Length: 221
Ligand code: G6P
Ligand code: MG
Image 1: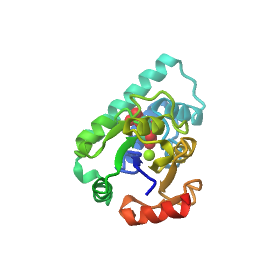
Image 2: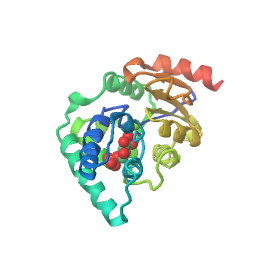
Image 3: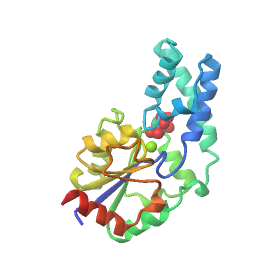
Image 4: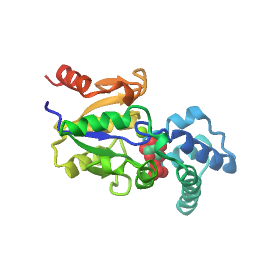
């Protein structure tokens, strides 16, 4: 196999935190008098916290100073942290642990590549931090997806060349970031949305090493 490193996005791939982000952003939007729908929430997937706030403010045609923006982003994050602090290993999405264990047994290196600054807290809550050889998250990168920084950083930490990494991503911005990093990308979600991914699965429960090998063969040879 040419692939040596497997990089997983966290939100939407390993855990379903979009619902908690939505509840916290919705609470903030209500407070600001902005109508924010679950459909709007789709636009925030993979997008950094401050960029997400900018999108919401744009929807509500609302202008705030940088200081106010930071205050509101902190408020939203406190509510979000309240939700994720109650997560348990039961919140790990189906098939994730089995697939990662299979990859590890095969000697592949595993990393997280997430925009979230709450990555350490989520990994602690769901108890699978020790399955990852490296964690690249919103605390160590400056540029948000679709910039490739987070995935390049993950590959770097693994000591694997980008072209020998595969990324698992649920967000359009994340798929683009993987492509920008020169990596092969498997989309997690719907093929109608993740059109640029090399292959799309509905969840990690659909994935195993044999399938990864055959997808790699079809795409890389
Ligand atoms: C992930 C989520 C986004 C979220 C971002 C930052 O990429 O998909 O919806 O805005 O992380 O998360 P944070 O926990 O740092 O606010
Ligand atoms: Mg995601």
